[in-house]
Image (cartoon, rainbow, N blue to C red; front, side, top):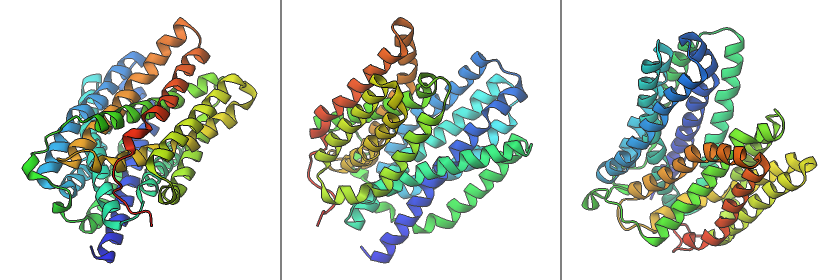
Length: 375
């Protein structure tokens, strides 16, 4: 494929990943004000937030099917437009029900975008003939940081969430329309003959288990590291920073080492970092930073392997992986909470160490034929 076309496609996907992180972080940054404006209790807000997860989980398999029929280009562009413009909806909510419904729409768009943009990123990597997924995933993290920082600043200026969401959504829609021509053609990853059908092979199940474990670990650190550190958010900040830095340099590692080695090594490093944080509380910050290093390359490697473990639509395989990750992200933190009540938070987090170590055993799942040359 023409090098200029591939370069434009890579830039386009970088922008899309950045937008996804930035738009989602924009919503998260204003949750307290939205809660206050509607007058919701903590439990009412929690139930409303289920709309986000529900919409996402319902839309993911549909997105996988659509990608098989149309290709990831069309689905990514459409999902990004709906996600960015849908950001305005929570700002209009006036009750628990309307907030839940608006978040269901936002979640459906976010889930569809998650599946389609990752599928297109895999197609871009294959077209490029070299590892690029880690840097693309770093763009999502950078977008999240940017959205959170700007959200905090705008909140301090007293700008209403509705106005903030409208402005951010317009910018997101404009950026999507601007870069959409740069996507690869739809035929590069459509598989109409398969009708997006999913076949659960042992290798795909192994990749799903890896995704579940690492998304659960990320959710656990996001939700529980602050409590473990007695109110400090520095642990999660260090984790996020080292994971972003690791992903910026991860493609170089993917060029030099096999997927199996990277997953096994990353899993061991992440497990070791969390074990350090739990066994030696004085070194907890260093431990959380090490977890970020270990986790940084695993998910890009797993997603990169999706195209070679499924003989149908890559979109269907990607939908399965992201749904597996979402299950870990949504179910993990509450499960840790129950375990912490039954034992202690430290003991509960040791279960996460075990799940990270499971990545070493599951590493052979990515030892499939290479989809990207390493020479």
